[in-house]
Image (cartoon, rainbow, N blue to C red; front, side, top):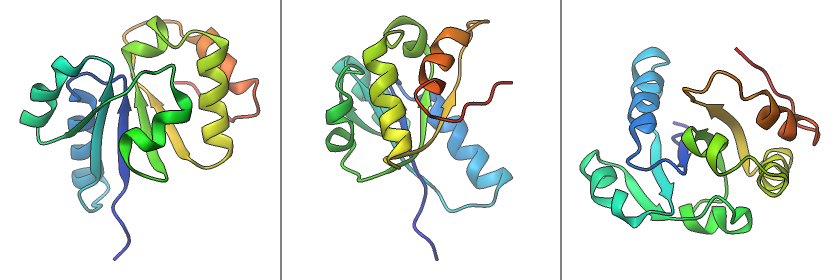
Length: 136
């Protein structure tokens, strides 16, 4: 059997998106249960994430170099980014480290989950750095 997918929510707070992704990968794609971690600067989310059965680690979205150490993996198959893309990652620094991690294979794919209608600028900031992006 192949290794389970590794899913990380970047700035994911309690990790609700991870619970949804886990259900999707298991029930819709018939894959083994994925490894899951919510990474967030606010340690107060830890009990919430752990009560959902998730691993949790403190991590700041501005620390792209520390991402892999924070999750304890050499690769994230799917990174899920929601609220933080608009509010905290809308800058060249975050777009650069994110694009670099995708180009080098540290991150296999990014799933953006957002309630904001237009994230064109944030997505194009990563795309213009040599990463293929697709929208809805």
